[in-house]
Image (cartoon, rainbow, N blue to C red; front, side, top):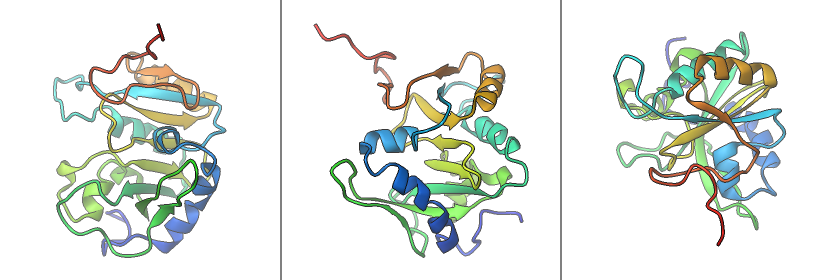
Length: 206
C-alpha cells in the first residue's frame, strides 16, 4: 500500500466507525480540550514543541513527522487512522464520503473530520494526499491514533507552538529520549500556549 487509503480521496466509512470511541470519550469535555488533547484516560500527556530541524531546515512543523514515525513504530502491525478537519484548506474539494462529526453539545461545537486508514509512512502527509495535493504541501494530521488506542496524536488546526500526544509511560519515555529539548509533560486539559507569543504557563491572576 503506497498511499493514504482510500486512493479515491474519500472519507472511509470503516474509519469513521473506528473513530466513534473518540467522539463518545469527549462528549462531556470542552471542544478546545477535546481537539488539543484528544480523549482523557492516557497515563501521560506530552506537549511537543515545534522548532527547527537539527540540520537547519524549517518547514514549520518539525518534529511532528518524526513523532508520528516513533508512535507508529510502537504500534507494529496495528491499523493506523488519521482525522483531518474538513476546513483546513480552501484549495481543492473536501474528499467525498461520510465524515466524523463532533455533535453539538453543551461542551462541543459541531465540527467534522475526514477520516481514513493510513500507512505509517504517510501519517504526516495524509492531509495533502487526501486532498490530492503534493505531499510536501502538507500539515500534520489534526488527529491520529492506532486501532488499539494505545496513543493519540492531537494537533488542532490553530496550534502554532506545540501539539499533544497522549500515551503510555513507555512511549512517553521514548519521546522524551528522542526529543529531550522539545517534550514536556502536562496535565490533561491544562493551560497550554496556542499562538506564538502566548506565555508557556498560565498567567497569574492579579
